[in-house]
Image (cartoon, rainbow, N blue to C red):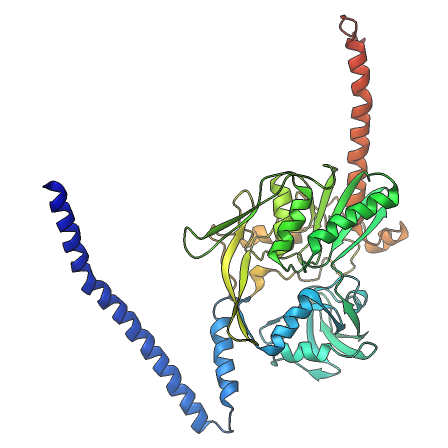
Length: 457
């Protein structure tokens, strides 16, 4: 009887809620229709009353771009040209300068130059503003137009006018375009230490890192004393490849989780058994240009205490973008989730804080050059826990341990101080381990024979 009554009450409650729910939905639809009607009205007014004729395509594209720009800096509409650019960034090569740029307040701003490209060799730095191309002002234009002008036939030159914080006046840099062959992974050996540099997370990077480890061992004829994983100025790339690279160095455990709009919308990625280096000492280098996928790798290795993270606080892009196809030649790149390190930390805004902060004091402009991070981008997603700007800018403070000038370092033959410091740290660690290992067999032998070892002081 009670059960029957409960069922009847539940049905009555559900029926009672139907008009309330329907009414709420109708209100939402009514509000949306009113906003769409407002947009159509403005569209028609522009078409009929603007001082010059305007193409429908231009107006619609502008409306779409404006809508997505109101969300966050990483959501965008991709037409056929944008699609081609995206494919180039993830798997191809092109003629250009090797720059990752963004648009901020109508100005083109450098996020980071790609390592060993014409822009990098010409001294372009993260945070630089590009105001003119070949003497022509580009302020107020579109980012696509600026990128199209900077790309071109290899061997041709272009003059960039740069505004850099700390410099009294703008200055010009002429750069010769080259084939930007996106070789994401390179390696070298210094002082018996393997240095693996990842410039971006394009396809097959995980396999390339594994191959680099094998090549380093083959060159030495044995295992190195340790590894440096250099991801400085790495703008990121494919999530799957960030997982693959993390898996190279981890035996087990969670690598990263991504969490969507709803509470249950969580996807986790885990390491498979097997560390390709055999657990050798590892230092990860990051800086303010290390973003997205590179932060996933640094965060995973840091949280599992597999590596020592060294350098500067990273960029702080903790969001995941998904490509949603609209047609054969267009798609929507939409921010659909945030990602979190194994300890549950979001790197959005705050980035990865290094275990050992090491400034790049071999850079003459280091102290005055502005560092561009996610928190500086207009419309960026806010970290849920809230962050103090003072904490994010702690790397701008002087550290008395790093007081040598670029000139003094150059006299000592040190051109890359952060890498030098990482190598020196690994060497000290290896030396300390060797000394510890050398004492252990002696202690063991002293105990053999049933009589405790004695020491005199």
